[in-house]
Image (cartoon, rainbow, N blue to C red):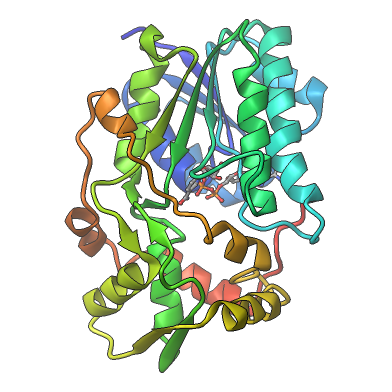
Length: 319
Ligand SMILES: NC(=O)c1ccc[n+]([C@@H]2O[C@H](COP(=O)([O-])OP(=O)(O)OC[C@H]3O[C@@H](n4cnc5c(N)ncnc54)[C@H](OP(=O)(O)O)[C@@H]3O)[C@@H](O)[C@H]2O)c1
């Protein structure tokens, strides 16, 4: 495998940290522009990582970051925006996808790997899903570049904000009333997602294609939350709310710091995040079940503690 230089946007996050570690372990150089280099101390010490304070939304800055890179990976994504009109989603997903394509063109980067999410669609019911769908369309239209799109369901693994978020919620609450308890998800392991990016980066057969990344089991949200509860040995009642109450809960929670749940999340959960297409198998990767990994980090993950602190302290990231 040739040693290459990767520019990873959003590389300091959950998926990005795992991906960066895998890329540098394989001998590659990884350039990580971030708004907050001080928060990425663990990545800075990895050999082969170049951490840069940069505003990737500025086209000139982005083209500068891309110069000399062989592959651009765009992992930037948000689940909630600062406002409520979809502008933050558009900026983070659609406008940045346009800028990433333009940066590849102006800096001569031939390869673009783009992270989307299931079930993104331009006619989806939420700003999140629609903006992810529009971003896919932008990337797909860039036929002069070698592009590959990944569409994962919810991703679990050490440092996630999925199982850890529920672990943090279940801790202090005696009961957990859950909106969209029957939402269908197909959790996929972050190690498998990383393997998919690494395979695709070197495989020309993936050019122009998109891959649904899903785990081996379809689970409802309620099943997942009860699994977390049982693994943590907690005795908490988890029950579903009818949709009208669930929407009301989301509408109230989105005013709390950190937006634990928003109406946009509620609308996204109305569509199954599942797929019959096993993109991991298409890439020659065997899917890892949730139960094989979750017990190795649930309850002892630093992210759980951070999420618990954020629920009372922090504000939603402004975009
Ligand atoms: N995690 C999942 O379950 C899941 C499921 C489906 C799809 N995805 C997609 O996978 C990608 C990575 O997810 P993740 O869980 O790793 O996310 P994450 O932990 O929240 O990290 C996202 C990264 O994007 C950067 N970022 C966020 N908002 C930005 C903005 N407005 N402008 C510039 N940079 C911004 C942040 O970098 P800095 O703060 O360092 O600047 C952050 O490191 C996202 O596109 C997400 O939509 C994730």
